[in-house]
Image (tube, rainbow over all chains, first blue to last red; front, top):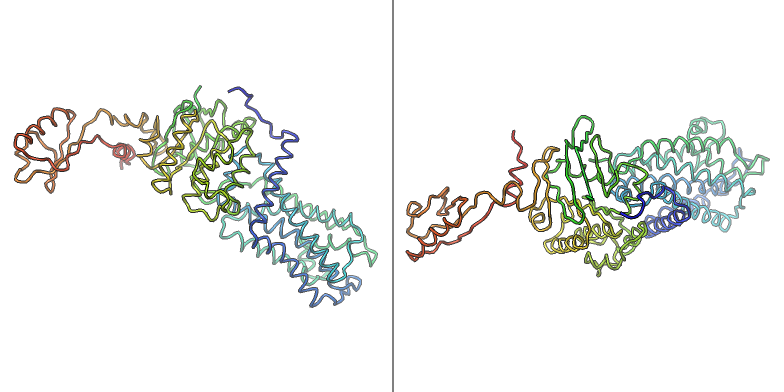
Length: 267
Length: 300
């Protein structure tokens, strides 16, 4: 054996290229499943159009009398991020683990960090596509203005992407098998979305708002909404909400690292 | 240097001992078969050698490094190829896409076209994985195992689910790889596969090694008794024969002997003198399967 038998876990630029390449393959895998891709990306857009067209012009008294659709655009942008980074990511990881795909990749020279980074970056790309589509539909279809504070909007979206990705990976470790993955993860996701006021904004201080404030979903919706909502003189930076989203993200990260498994849980 | 060296390997899961005091060596360039019933510890040993699973005790070297040693794991994975027992390939890629992706993980991979040809998937190169038959997916699986141009290839039941011609093709491929210097560690339940491919064999039962050797010598197969079988000719009874027999049923006679030349000489001379035939005459050594079943029978 000629070469020294050590290749570092990070080999600089060549590893950055490796991650970029892996992100491309993750994207390919996602878009090559047209039904899955259309459902993931299209769902939020279709919902925005339906709700915007039916109830979009109603006013929300407790948010400075803005049109409902003005709330729906950031709300569904938040939904798009959570769907790609939490829901789809968690289900995909359970499927890959149980099919033995993770184990197979583990036995190649692709480092663990590079694989996970690529999977998370790919989810972020998908959710970014959704966010851009939703902003465009809101602008063109319902004359919803873009966020007043773009910086605050981008920061909120990125914090959400990272936190919900961590929670998505953590969630995948809690689901024992493929059959349970879709139903269990989606039910948790949609119940939290409903309680957190995605479809019907929960009045601040109400019992529902109080209950859902223990979970990250409502805080993330509010943090994405804040940069749009400068009419009542509120700050575009919802620091408190972002902090809670980030704390959940850290908890998710710890659970993900501690419970991560490469092998199928069956057998 | 040995490609693999295992000394007093132990692995315990909770209270169950999956591997007990196993030792063996695999030389570079040989085809080495691990045999044993399901649950005997084969996959656990392979996973320890790959660095996928930690061991409880003992010493292990794969290509000269400890597979559990994290700093050398990435290096080790550039030099091994793995075909898992379960089919595991992403469904939406084409054959070429998934092979190209995996080739990119390795510093000096085989060309993707060469791999596609080696595993016989030229016509399916651009087909989606999910449209492949089980046998074709198995071939792709083997392709993924060799695309990195490994020095050491782990094949966990590589021909399960293949039709007879697919099995022969895979055997040819394994022989070709071995002739080029690739070391192959193989598990299988097919004894003809072991006879055809393996240079050395280890048989495991209940987490322990119960026999080692070449396929031809395993369990004293090369020296033990030979079985001669034939049907009694019309009008002849077993007591007319010039040699003692060991069993007779429905006119079929079985003779066991360690002196087969002399017995055959007597028998054939006797038959020729009387102008008789011995229908269905066969002479067989004990098969590898017989030996294997004997070795892995649980004495309870």
